[in-house]
Image 1 (tube, protein in one colour):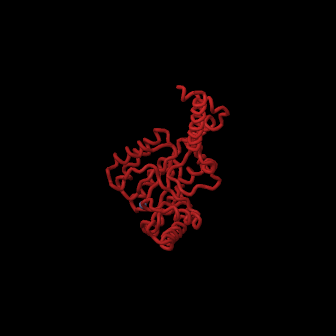
Image 2: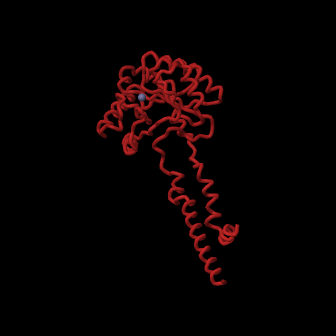
Image 3: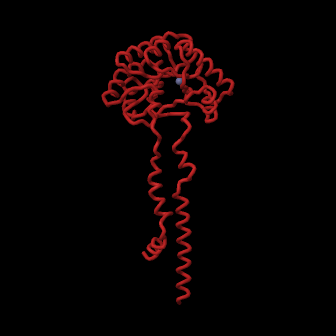
Length: 275
Ligand SMILES: [Zn+2]
């Protein structure tokens, strides 16, 4: 009787210990990953920025457009708001004066390719030409080279991001707020979507080639301002970046010490089979 009891007890201890071990491995974060959460290398790609404050970046793609970009620049100047334009090379050479004006008035100019293709489907040499020609056109118009690029349709592979960053020094800028203004849903819808979805650190996508987008801007900018948001360029937003604090990590870390580190696991074990 005693022997069988002892046997049962030791079998149970063995079972419970292995269970606990399995739990340990499940709960412990991979050590390398946990450490690399505080990166020493600068980030290459952003769709929003972790900032301490109500800062956001409005971005306008696919211009410049003779009428609409000029109109947008007027209403931004009246509100002392700085934004970022991701311009198309073909349009820059058509209206270099608009790019020059935007840069002179404190806006940032980013590279949005020469002719708006799907870069992910192109050869490296094709992509290089799209970016280099546009880089040159921006330099000629604005006086300085861009430090940001946004791939048309957000289409860029991880490998391309890496070499483009290495070769051009660009940061790749995506977005976290998309009002789908290119579908032309009307100014009210564009405005409502942007105001509803924008958070601190947001990068807002829209296009200064659609009349409805420009029409939406006065009330959009006023409402965002009324909510306390402050407008900065994308590069300014990135300069405010704080290290990301992964949301899952604190929970895991809290759970780990009791699971692994407890010197008296037996107490936990005896508790459960007895209960
Ligand atoms: Zn575009």
